[in-house]
Image: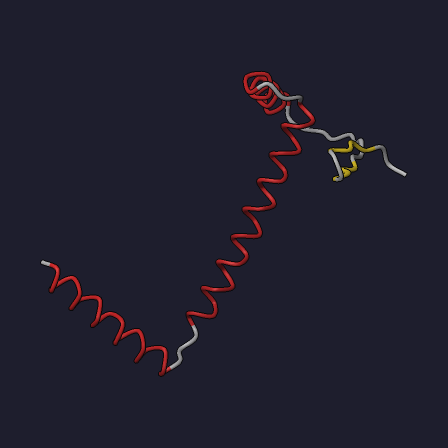
Amino acid sequence: MPDGITYDTLKVTTMKTAISMEDDLLSEADRMARRIGISRSRFLSLAVRDYLMRHRQEQVTQRLNEIYRQNNPEDARLTGRMKAKFRQAVKDRW
């Protein structure tokens, strides 16, 4: 069973791993980790988590773009009506 850290009722399991990366990239990561006061491991974990979250968001955006690209006549009519209402609202405001 992997070692872990327990925070109140939340148990976070961790796993040791060995990775290879360019010297300059690791040096920059170490500098940033020291600057913000966290360990290298924590910094790299946060970086990977951030990358994965952004990747998931990009996948959702790509899927939505695919859906919206599909030509649906009803959608085109609805979009036209929405644009007309928006233009009228802007015109009335000014």
